Amino acid sequence: MIYVMQIHTDKTAYVALFLERWLLREGESVYAPTYEKEMTIRGEKRLVTKRLFPGYMFIQSGAVIDFYTRLKEVKMEGFLLTLTKLLGAEGEFIPLSDEEEKEFLSLTGEEHKAGMSYGIIADGRLQITSGPLAGREGDIVRIDRHKRTAILSMPFMGRRVKVRLGLEVAEKS
Image (cartoon, rainbow, N blue to C red; front, side, top):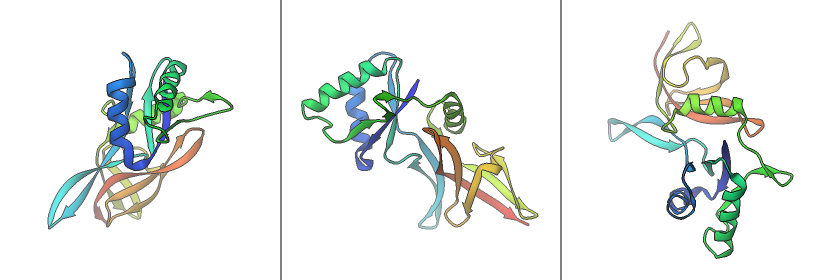
């Protein structure tokens, strides 16, 4: 099951390294999903990687109570003191629902990285030709052709959130 941990945004790499090195056991993993977007830097197009959910990390674990106990012990010793918080409600940790997990994995794949999407605007309608946004045109809230991004509405922790993904619109007719 996939659980969500809230962290300080600028400490993602530190928390991931610490958890991988000292806290995770066999069969558990931690990751911060990313997306690719194209940017023009000094006249040259480059693919840049950005965080899909800034301030959140995902924990894959079959024994979340055991993981939380280990995390709590480490926090009491002063490591990761205020950096992390496992999300839940009423004293229970809530994993992503099957629908949320399916949507999340269809966007990012097993590498937890959403690639660039490509599309066109024909007769005022957006058509995605390739990439993780293909077939999700109805969930796209807004596109920014200048920044080469699309804002997608998707389910996350029992509500709908907006996430930014890379989108290159090749032509408009």
